[in-house]
Length: 247
Image (spheres, rainbow, N blue to C red):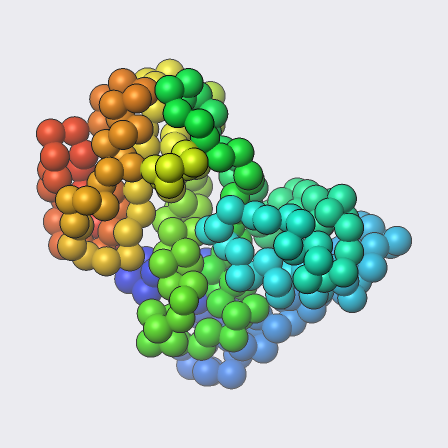
């Protein structure tokens, strides 16, 4: 089970979490070895012609983008590689289950939406290892804290729904040119379920604007806010707060 109370600080791999309870050094060594083996053994074996040095630099850079829209041109310039190579790298880490590509929701014909892809590291332990974040205090003070929490919640929701064996579900994110945004849109036979994710425990009414606009524009029945609140409660007539500990 993941450590939801720590917002995915240590990730979801059982072995390092269990062993680290009696050996503080074990967790760091395990994570370092995992990333090293992933790059130098797995990726090298699957893609023998790949520039491993550039790919490793790409992973370090990508840690800054988890939960963000991806500007591939900026990434390519920073790494001095082509945009097509960045796209190839993103496809590789998505297909090897380290990263999840999240496509933009384009079903709202009333608004002009941004169509850049967004993505997230599927395990927060790996993300925090790449960012050299060692404890919860460092995480909460780090600029990436909100995006890390968002990535953690999105992955928990998607995996939880997949565990129910539900079929026909699609996942995307939503952002318009006027900055109206929803972190995750779940689409199925029921229609659309927009989810907004907040690191704080108290929701300000003006922060619900993106959800409210989405619900109105798509005629969705309800929306969800996942945060660090203490209880499940209705924030508006059709927006419910669900604390992260209930996931």
